[in-house]
Image (cartoon, rainbow, N blue to C red; front, top):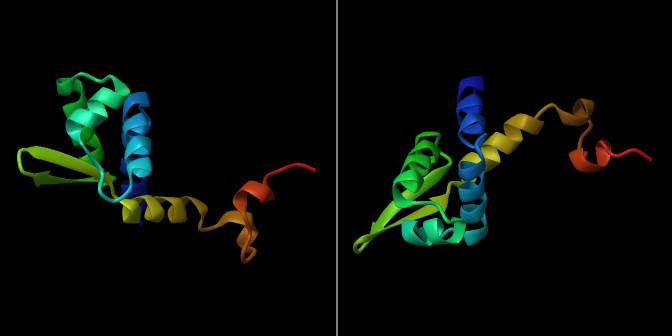
Length: 107
């Protein structure tokens, strides 16, 4: 991953509604959710939801597919894993098998 891709992905989830949408889709699993269910669950109006889904899709963090007359959205786990790997690739001063959460805790 390059820095431009990382910035695009991070900026796309640096907004409350989009972060909530992304987290909901991560929890939903690979099958995802239809747009209407996302809007209902998060109480986001359709036009606003459409805008946020477009931004997340443009950043490559979510995928969409049409099933009958519904559009299902799902998290792009590969992109999410790539972003996490990019953010942590130099963590723990290069110590192999370090855990960032435990490395940062104070004792």
